[in-house]
Image 1 (tube, one colour):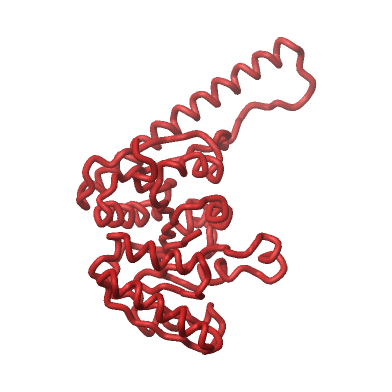
Image 2: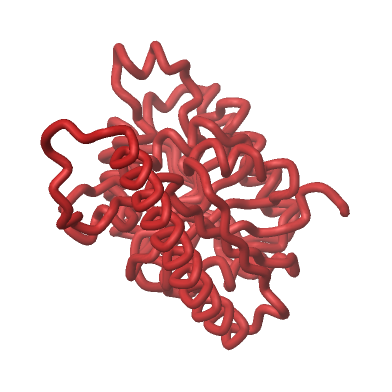
Amino acid sequence: MKPDNKILACVDQSHFAEHVADYAAWVATRMELPLEFLHILDRHPERARNTHDHSGAIGFDAQQALLEELSQEDAALSKQAREQGRLFLNRLRERAMAAGVEAPDVRQRHGALVETLAEQEDGVRMFILGRRGQAAETTPRELGRNVERVIRSLHHPILTVTDAFTAPQQVMIAFDGSSIARKGVELIAACPLFVGLPIHVITSGEPGKGARRQLEWAKTTLEGAGFTTHTALLAGDPESVIAAQVRERDIDMLVMGAYTHSAWRSLLFGSKTTDLLRASKIPTLLLR
């Protein structure tokens, strides 16, 4: 099997899964790559409320019987979770096929989210995941608790999805002239994902010659690949500038480098990636 040959959509059993499925189908059809849905099952699902009284001292035989009973309950819960997951994945599979994806694959795995995705990375061109997940059904958290850990652990592009699918019409690159930002421009220039869509390249900061030169390079690279390109160098901090430009230019998808500083630097100064993800309400393609 050729490496990096599929789109991997990571889904959980929340209403956000349909948004992920729709964007994953759009990416897979645009890039003409196979699509796989991955549902990760918790190794230790929560048990339903147990009505047995386990208090007090019990003998060895009673302990063994209790362990066997709990083991049987675990097995039944695991079987139920697998069956629910199978039905859930089949619904997403049918949804993707209706959107034009040919024979999407589905898979369930037991394990932890971050470690499981890292294990899959060698065969993946792009990951798709919801910026919020099942826990967000009951909490107002803007950014899922695992999203930052996942993004930091992976090295391939990751599309983080926020809401119901809208076919992108305007794409914006948050460009800072760094090596990862330049790599992102080259990736977009060579990739069929955004063919036919205008690309806006926005840089924030002081309008020095270096910044203008980098911006001109990005414009030339993208126009050389056939893209209609709009550029701007604007004063202000990246979070405020990008959020304002997304609104003013009716941007449907944002492309940006992710966590380019060390975890220690982020701890000291905060993470612009996390700030931008929280501020942005549109799907964001993150490059590592």
